[in-house]
Each structure stands twice: as C-alpha cells, then as structure tokens.
Image (cartoon, rainbow, N blue to C red; front, side, top):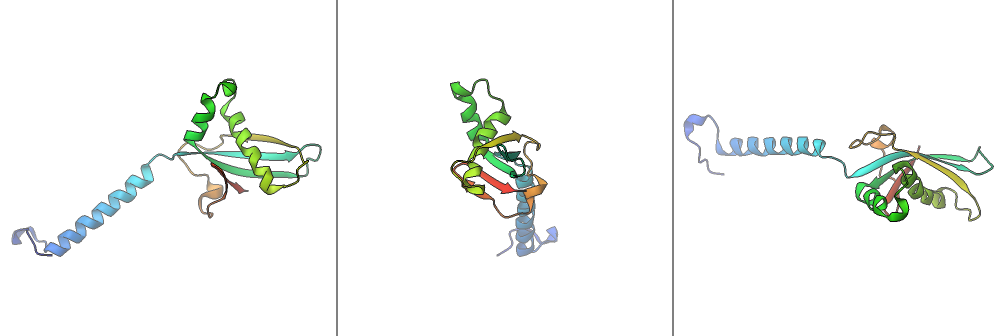
Length: 138
C-alpha cells in the first residue's frame, strides 16, 4: 500500500495500516465484551412428582424478547418472571425424561445477573435447543 503519510511521521504506509487494523480489532473486541446480552439465564430444577430422587438441574437461556412477549399476555399479568421461566422450562422434560405420563414440579430462579453468562455453561458447547429455549444439564 503506498504511503500518504509524510516521512516525518515515522510510519511506513503498511505499518500504519496494520496498526489501524489492529486497533480497530482491539476496539471491536472490547465493544463485543461490553454489549448487553439479549438473553436471560435462569437456574431450574425439575423434580418428578412423588419421586424426589428423580431430579434434574438445568440452566436455561431464553431471549429477552420471548420473556417480554410472555409478560404482555393478559393471562400472565400476575405471573412473576420465575413463574414464566418455569412454564418455558417445562419443555425440557420432554428431552430429559420422555415418559408421557410423568408429572414434574418445575421451579426456576433468575439466579444469574443480567448480561452475564453463567459460569456453569460459559465454556461449554451450545446447549440443547427447544424452540426459543436453550438448556444445559448441570
């Protein structure tokens, strides 16, 4: 790349260009680290009714938009976020315990700070997806 910079700048054109690219990439990586997450994480437990030894602990990930959509439904006006997340987490049973007559109690808690990925799943591959929900067994 030809240099448009005067000789007194101390930079050759390609070095200057490389420095700009490196700086841009560094700033982009910083920006990516600070971008708010568009997902909500919750910790849930699913316990088979009448059989407390059959229990699953999972982390679920739901898009914030899905939770907002559920909040706006008139039928959910008196539901807490934890209850709404629990209703979504009920889908997990169909994968973890695919027995049609099994009944489970589901409890979820927004245990994790918003905009952070839980340490339990941070370095793991993407979890199992069911519609808008992703989950990991922990």
